[in-house]
Image (cartoon, rainbow, N blue to C red; front, side, top):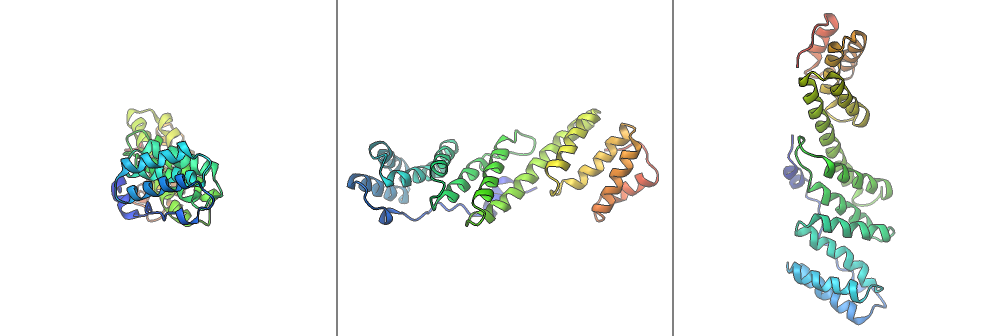
Length: 253
C-alpha cells in the first residue's frame, strides 16, 4: 500500500504559487493595496510571519476592500506551507463559502481537501481526516466539475476510498479473528455497499463467504463465492472459492 507521503510526492499538484491579483483589483484604498503587496512580497520570500502580519492587517483594517478577499486566500496558503492545517482549512473554507463564484474558489476547496489529506494516518488509526478530505474533494467535483482541479480531485478521491475500504477491512478482520462473525459481516458489508469499486472488494467477498460458513448460512456462502468467481476470475482467492463451491468446509483465515 502506498504511504501518504509517497502518494503526495507522486501527486505533486499543490499549487501555492498563485499569481498575485493586485493589478486586477480596482477601487481599493491605497493603504489596503500597500499592505497586501507587502504581504505577498514577504510570502514570496518565505517570510511567513511577516507576511501573515501584513495580510491580517488588510482583513482587520480594510475588511470591505477587495484586497481583503485575496488576503484571506493568501493567509490560508501561508498557514498551509507552515503545516498549520487546521487554520489553513478554516480560511480556505471561509473563502469558498462566501465567494463561491470567485475564480479561485475551486482552488480554495481543493486546498481544504489537501489540509485534511496531510493528516491522513495509517489504516489502523482513526480515519476522520480521511473522511473529511473525501467530502471536500467530492464537493469540488460536484460544484466545480469542469475546473482545473476537478480531475486531480477524482484521482485523490479514488485513493481515499481505497484507504477507507482498507480500514473497514482491517476492523472487520479484527472481529473475524475474535470469532465475532456478525461484527465482521457488518464491516465487510459496508465495504461492498460504500466502496464497491475499490480493490478491497475481492478479498472482502471471500471473507464474507467464510463468515457465512461460520454462521452456517450455506446458501449465502455459496452465492458469495459464486459472485467472487464470476466478478474476479483472476483473483488469488478464486481457487479457494471454487473449492468451497465444490466442497464447502469450515473456513480458514
